[in-house]
Image (tube, rainbow, N blue to C red; front, side, top):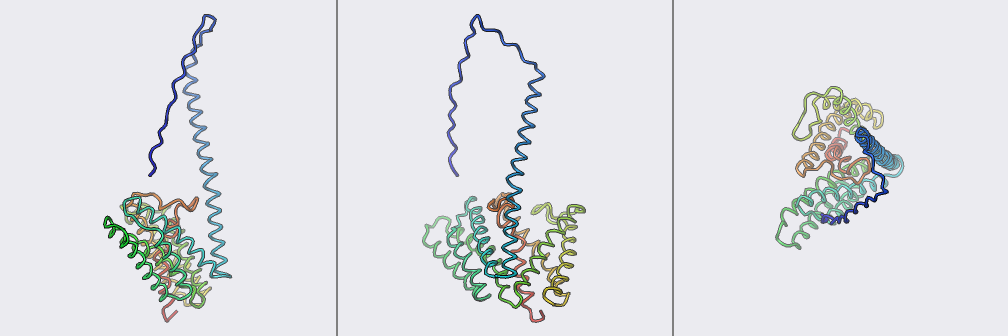
Length: 317
C-alpha cells in the first residue's frame, strides 16, 4: 500500500485592503446560498451518475460481447480458441485471488500459479484428465519449491494458500477444457454453459420477485430458497431440452445434470462468497470492466465443470 501523499496547503491569500473608494460589499441573499449549494450538489451527483454509467455500461457490454464471441468461435469452429479463452480467464482469476489473499497477509506467489494456470488447461486439452492431474502435481511441486526457497516466516501458510488457489481456480475449471476431448465435447460444453446461465437467470428472476427465505444469510444474504427453486426448475427444463436436442441423449440425463448444476453452481457461489467475506472484500477484483473480477463471473463454473465432466463421461451417456 502506498504511503499517503503529503498534501501541502499554500498560504491563505491576504485580504485586499479596503480603501476609501472601495464600495462596501452587499450581503448576499441568504436564501441563494443553500439554493446554489443544492444545485451544485445535484449537478455533481448527476455528473457522477452519468460518468459511472458511461464508463461501466459500454465496458460491460464490450467485455460481454468479446467473451461471448470467443466462446462461440471456440464452440462452433475452433476449440483451441475456447481453451485459450479459458487460459486467459484463469490467469486473471489466479492473479486476483492471489492478490486478495496477499493483501490480507497470506503471501501467495503469482508466478507458480500462472504456470499452473497454463499447464492445467493445456494438459486437459491435449492429454485429458490424466494430464490435468499431472499438471496439478507439477504445479504443487513448483509451489513447494518456491516455499522452501523462502525464509521460515509464513512459509506454511503461503504454501497452503497457494495450493488452495491452484485447486480452486485452474484445476476445477480445466474440467471444462477436458470436456472438449470427448465426442461432441463442444456441444457438451454448450449444454453446461446453458444450464449455468439458466441457473443464474431463473434464480435471479424468481428470487428478486418472490425471495423471502434466505438460504445462508451469513454467507450470501441475497440467495433465497425461492430463487434456488427457480434455478432448479429452469436449469432442469433447459438441460432436458438442450441435451436431447444437441446431444441426442435421453432427456433425463439433461434433467439430472440440470439439478446437479444448480447444486454445484450454488456451492461455487457460496465458496466465493465465503472467501470474499473472510477477506472482507466486495468483489474479487475489477479486471473485467463492468463485471467485477474474473472469479465473480467464473464462480458458478468452479464445481459445475467437474460435475458436468463426470456426468457426460458416464457409460450410459
